[in-house]
Amino acid sequence: MTNIRDLAREADVSVTTVSRVLNDHPYVAEDKRQAVRDAITKLGYIRNQTAVHLSTGQTKTIGVMLPYVDHPYHAAILHGIAQSAFEEEYRFLTWQTNYIASHEQTVLQALAQREVDGLIVVSHSLPVEDILQYEQYGPIVFCEHHEDVSSVYINHYTAFQSGLKALQTFGHIQIGICLGRPDSTNSRARKRAYQDTVSLADADWVYQQALTIEDGARIARQWAKQTYRPTALLTASDHVAAGIILELRKQGYRIPEDLAVIGFDGSELAVVLNMTTVAVPYETIGRQAFSIATSADWRNHPQVEIPTTLLSGLTALESHE
Image (tube, rainbow, N blue to C red; front, side, top):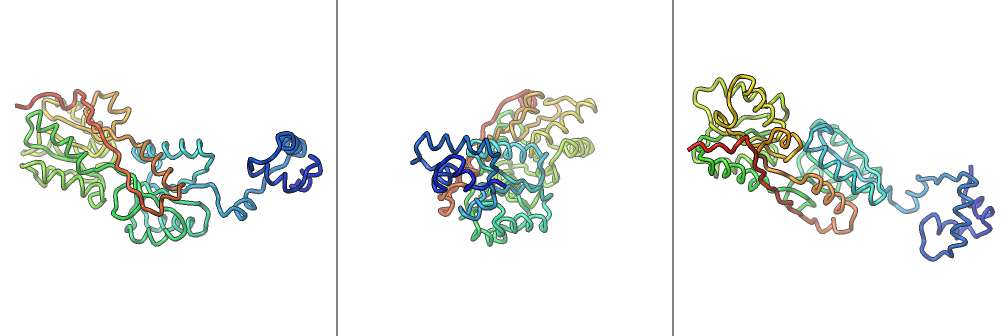
C-alpha cells in the first residue's frame, strides 16, 4: 500500500512537504504541490482516514438524531444539515430512533466514543438532562428550545398563537387544535397558546397523536361524529391538515364553510391544496444547527430563534361571522 514516503520519493520532495500538501498547508511552493498531486494520481494513493482522525482528533463528521427520516418536518431539517455539511466538506451520520430511548442512548454512545465530532438532536424522548451528560464529549445542539443549551428553534407558542388569532379574525370562536405527541416540549407550548388565546377552549377539541395524513383522516371522522364541535381547526402539520381536508371533502363537507383548517409547516403540500399554513423555514433551522455544532461557540450555548410566517390560502379564508 502506498504511503507518504512513497509519495515523497516519487515527487522528489520531503515527507514534510507531502504532509503539508495533504493537509492543505498554505506555505508550499506551487511546483512542489503539483508534484505531490501528480504522485498521488500516479501511485493511486488513498489516504487513511482513521490515521487522520487520530492525528487531528476530529472525524469531520456530525451525528444527527431524529425519530423518523421520512417525516416532512424532520426531513426538511435534515436537508438543511446535509446542504451545510456538503458545503463545509463534512460527513453526517443519521440515526432514526423512533423515539425509543435505547436507540437514542446508542446515538449518545457514538458521540462518547468519538465516532462523530458533535450531535444535532432534531427531536428526542430522553430527558434533556440525560442527553446533556454527554456534552462533555462534544457539542450537542437541539432543534427545539430548552433553557441553557445550544438550540435553534421556533417559538411554538407565538407561532401557534398566530394561527389561532388568524382564525379569530375570520370570526371563529369555536376553535380546536391538533397536537402531535402530547407530552413533547412543542406540544405543551402549543396547548398553552390555545388555552391562553381561545376563550372557548374545549378539551374535546384538542385532538391528540396527530402526525400523519392518516391521523388527519381519523380526526376528521372523529370531528364529524361530534354533536358539539369546532368550526375551525389549527393542526400540528400540513400533512394532518391535508388528511382532514381530503377526508371531509370525501364525506361531502365544505372547506372552509363547514370547517376552516390551518396547517403548520409551509410545505409543498400546502401549496398544492392552497392551504392556509404557518410556514416554518426548517432548512434554516438545520443550517443554523450545523453552524453551531461545528463552531467553538457551542460552549456558550447560543440560542437562535427562527421566525415563522402565516401564509394565506383558501382553507381558512371564509368569514364565519
